[in-house]
Structure formats: structure tokens, C-alpha cells
Image 1: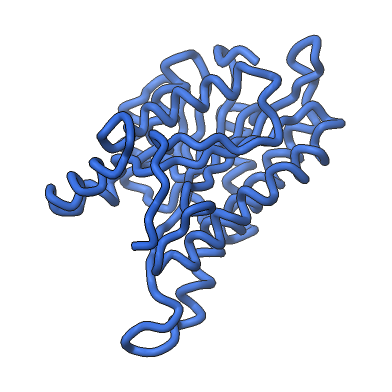
Image 2: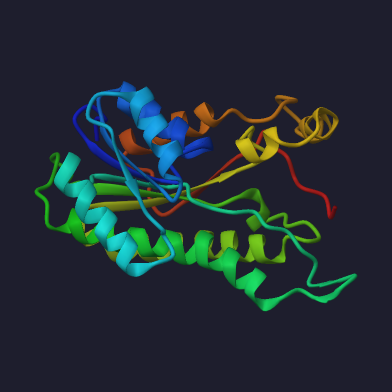
Length: 256
């Protein structure tokens, strides 16, 4: 699919990889709807993008919130042909720490945002895509791109919840791609390594440097725009389907 003229919905669109992807796709002629819980940041991002971009406040973990958000996005910029799920959290905690077992709600929260949130918006976006006309001779109607993580494969101590959530995103990629194939909808996932997002920006400089040198090549943190560029290629390459792409500079995370 050619990006120009497509409608893209991006969760976690107020910052980080979501914001970068929204700006990047809009710059190539897509109509974008940014979804996030942070209303103020959303308004700022959409103002920066300009054009047809719209901001929709959405809690991806809540069925009704997501349903309202997807309906509003469709009414404002059109039914989606692209969904990029970037909403996520990386709360860490040992299963049994100094204060005892990890509170169950801490584990549940990460699973709810990273996994259930991605599934929630995907099911709604796909339902809209299935009602649209094919966009080309291949019969494509859309593409879903979920965000996994290298932690799905190389989870560190303290990342049980995060790794489990991202591992599940990886695991559902192929079965959902197979299910949606008859409708001309592709499903992919990107597993980023260490990306320079607002979460990392708040860390001390020496911590950021120590993380960067762990990357074999290039020896630096990833740029959110590099994620956006991979999204662009996935959208435009119809043979990419049912697969997870690591974008990590060949890093393999150590135990801690």
C-alpha cells in the first residue's frame, strides 16, 4: 500500500515512537489519528503535525473508551487502513522482592496495557478494515503493526510482567495474521531494542551511555524515527505478514 492518502490510527501517539510515527506518516500524506490518555500532550502533538491530524483521548485497556475513540477517529479522518499500536508501559519488579511477592495488580497492569490494550484496539480497527473496499490488486484492506520488544526474547530480571506481555504480542502475530488473511489485512510486530524515548530521557546521562554501549552496532540508542521508518516499509511491502522484526542493533539483553 502507498502511504499517501491512507488513514492511520496510532496508539501511544502523544510521545515516543507513537508520536514519531504519527508525524512521519503524516509527512508522507497519511491522515493520522493519535490516541493516548494524555490529552494535553495529544493536543500539542497534533498541533505540531497540523493538517488532518486529530487527537483522541483513549484508554486502550477499556472496551468502551476504545470503541468511542475508534468511532471518533473514523468520523474525523476516516476508517483506518493502518493501525500502529505503540501504547505501552515498562513497569519493573522482581517476582519476589525485598518487600515480598510482587503485588498481583502490578503484573496485571502491565499485561492489561501492553497486551490487552493492543488486542482491544486491533479487534476494533480490523472490524472497520473488513468493511472497506480493497485498496489494490492484491486485495489489501489494511495492516496492523503491534509493538513487541526484545524483552520478549531476552527478558531481564525484574521484567517478568513486561516480557510476558511482549512475548504474548509476539505469539499472537501469526494466528491473527492467518485469521485476517481472507480479508486482505496483514498483521506484523516490531520488537525494538533500546530506543531513546521519554522514559529513557529521564534517566541520568551515565545510565543512558551504559545502555548505548551494550548495542553491538550502531553503538547508540535507537531513534523513534527509525521505528517510524520501519513502519513505513511494512506498510508498503505487501509480503511482510505474520512476522516479528527485531530492530535492536543486534543487542541481546543480559540477565541484569
